Length: 205
Image (tube, rainbow, N blue to C red):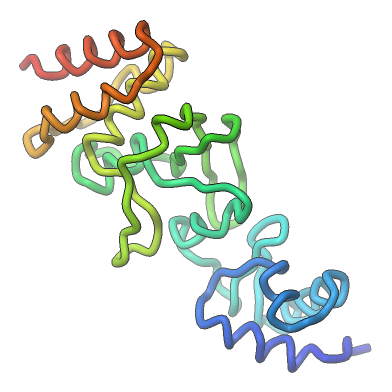
């Protein structure tokens, strides 16, 4: 039996004007309950008009979105930005393509798996949650190359095996004064010393 209102739900989905959305968003704009929206989306998925990416996360159409398209909607109640090796790769500082998308968050560190790809969240102290801007061309918040590098070194101060090596590293376009400036936001003295030491080591030929 066809769920009632699925055509209206598809219309609301199209009105959002983007491929990725949450079921909570769709419930809000359609004025329908969460259970009705879930049933409608399940029907639309069987018709090839929607695809479930993860818990409460959907995409319009039958195809999966790109991994980075998911970032702004991955954790609707938390702020995240693309940083660490993912940002360094996007800026051309690290040549090797990361296997997962690395995100900075003030929440606890964890891995997130979706049908569009895998993500790893790394916890930053609130004072370190800066140095990023919305990249209009790519459609997600992205750290500057200097801040992404400092984010990596900050994490390595607490987890020695994390970001201890950078494959195919090219620092020729990196502003070292800016990187040192971001290191000043590390409040933990031992961690700050570690970051500055690693920056100095990376400066060597």
